[in-house]
Image (cartoon, rainbow, N blue to C red; front, top):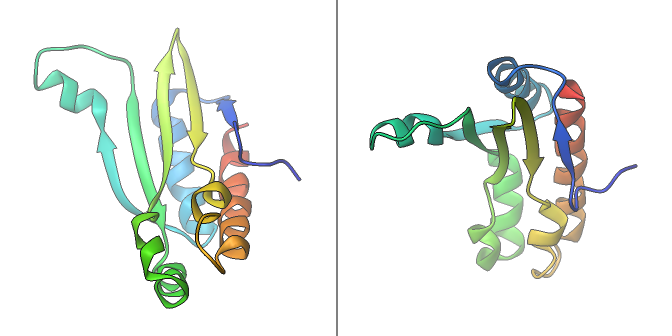
Length: 127
């Protein structure tokens, strides 16, 4: 199994389709899109142009409960981010490494690995 660390994918799909496929895969893999940040639209508001640029923040209430019950200090970690951006005509996708983010909190190593497995499964839909 691949690790999340340094995992960046060039999508086989155009930007909008990549975002659509990722959103669907998030739900299908037991996570939810908690929020979506459209940096492209935000830049337009100040008169700047950019290619597609979005961040999907994803997690799950049951996983959040496990975080809070195990180590309240780790509540700073979720949601986990998936970053989708266009560069030189190609759509790139990367995700945070949950194992690394949760590693500094006692008892959350397995949860970090579980979330990384979910993220890897999500990213497979665009490879």
